[in-house]
Image 1 (cartoon, helix red, strand yellow):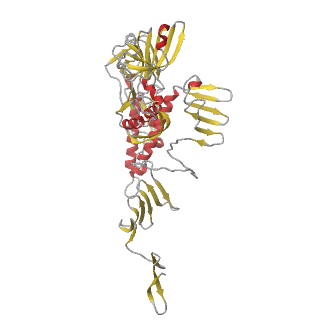
Image 2: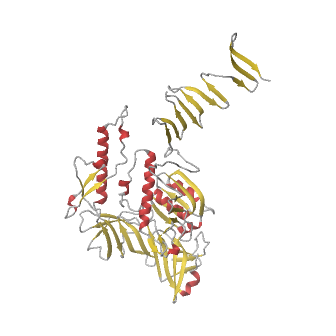
Image 3: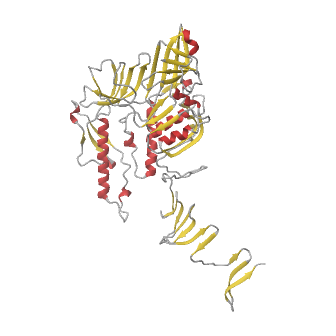
Length: 552
């Protein structure tokens, strides 16, 4: 039963203001992407198809609600597009909120309670990874998409319940075979990276002792052999230094060889089969939702392709899925759609051993994945005096915009007429709200605030060296530490205040509340107490010692 409700309906316990019997009702649902209902009906029911009204329809995922957005009339038919109730989140704005070192569930809860008006949504997630996120002047829907791109996972939308799950869909063992149950299908395949045997090349031209790494060379009738170079920036010689700070060459060489071997095998596992994308306009009874697993028996490969449903079209009237898109990769969606999708990023931006660089590389990888995903939905428009790169057409409906003209390059997330709050101008000025840098070398840094550290001390360390390249001062999450040439140290922090230590670690002076303590003291000139008493040294022909003088 398809029902229509007033815009302010919240309970949905009744059948609404009208039970509809439309001529067509199709739902389009995409993993981490669009979710809407297209409906066609007689013009006689036009009064019920008003913008803002809510249509509730039965689906395999329960009764789902869609809010009417666009209405058009042609001849004696009315056509509407209604977006899933999740998109109401676009109307709840977060002025400025900061998620600090939280898992995905806490991040969603934090953002859902930070909106200008109380949010009607509930949120939940099982993604355990820990990240930071600053949300400034964005809608709740935009913030959730940012969370997806940073924490990963899959967006599950169930009316006003919003979930981000590590895994979705089911594996029912469905197999499709070319020429049998795959007939009316559109297939796009990319064989450019297929290989079953590689010669991995590592740091400084390193070659494995066995030279080659192979995986199922019998998969194809012809060989697929490549030479592949890998970044081994995560293996540092200083991590293999002995007590005398000399690099143990044997352990270091063993580490980079093992690292190269692991990277080579991972690369083969990911690229032994072609990347494929399929569109099937047929009903498959063993598929019920996005994320479901479909095994494809490829005629040129002896190994089944493991694909997942990327998007689907559901006929509400027939109560069946009538169109599927599935594959083992897909560009164009937010988030991390397929486990095996193009992990070459991790080869060029490898994980560093130290936590601070590892986190920077993680953020760089995530940002690169978002950019790579977005490239699938980019459109370039030339307008004579400028070039526009848009996330959708027509240009008036685009939100993410890059504009290039003689003044430089500008970036906007509020459309072509919005604010370009990031720019690279022709005079060389780079004006950005956020920049992540792996290695920065410069002569002068100017700024208002330098923010370092968190509970993991990630990216929170500042070191100062003298002309002899000796460490003399360090600032980290524990405060300020100054190092003397003879092993003594001076520390300033919130817990202990101001403390001086001997080379053996013993306290030699410190501040306790309003008192200054010291083990020994040498006074060269005089001591004055409360402006009332002075102790001064006396050294005359007849007197050697201390004179006590009362101050009037």
